[in-house]
Image (cartoon, rainbow, N blue to C red; front, side, top):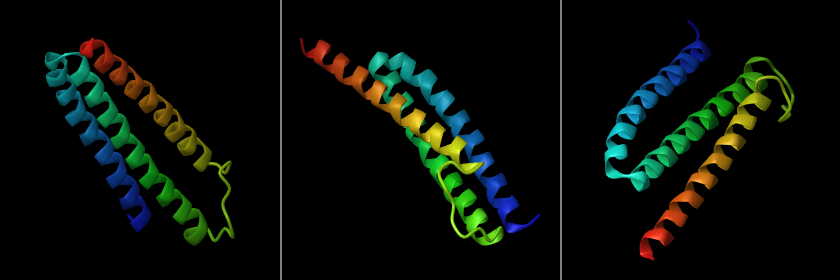
Length: 109
């Protein structure tokens, strides 16, 4: 297995282990109420975005260095999908943060 196969395998494994941890944390947070659930969901989304950013860097590096491409474009195969997912996650984070802020205002009266 070459270096990039190992990097991809490591990234995929970290996605799985993070998902397991966040699933457990979500169960605990549910017991803490809606506020806790929103916080855990935000953390989960942020973690996913960070991992996708690392994957984006790895794919970009592979295209530039391993495949010898002179440049890469955001619309390039393999990159666009990752960028779209990161953008979607960022929007979901903003929605969750807005919901959390609305809940705080409601609790304050």
